[in-house]
Length: 182
Picture 1 (cartoon, rainbow, N blue to C red):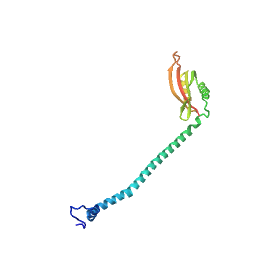
Picture 2: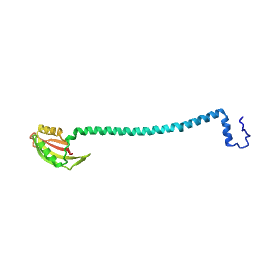
Picture 3: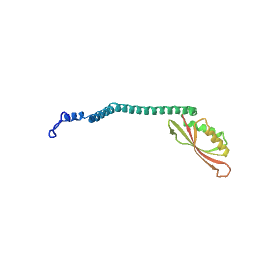
């Protein structure tokens, strides 16, 4: 029996009850085990867990930065492949004689010519030209081949091809051409 055992009628102080539990070996083991687990959790696991969380967040951030750097490098390589194809001048009027000179090389007749307002595509301005041409299939094909393999960055945005109404065997082609300016 514990040394401070008293009759059940008297109020037992808390300190005395605590010492009574410490004299019981099973309860003492449970209390010591619980305290060790609590100390291990608060003193070891929580600081290490916080450190691991911080390291994981930094690692994710640095991986995103690395991916961005790789993406920028890939974009630079792509840009270097076509930067010589972008004219240095930012003059939309310069495109008119350039396209007209190109069309004149082929057996096609220019029926209509319109230039729309400039468009923005990223850091570049784009010239929008609307052409209506008449000619044979071979002439149209040669002229489109010139546009597609041009040293400048030119894109045929839309194309409409129809036979001429007079039945002469010629075709009428409507084009919307986009040209990237520097």
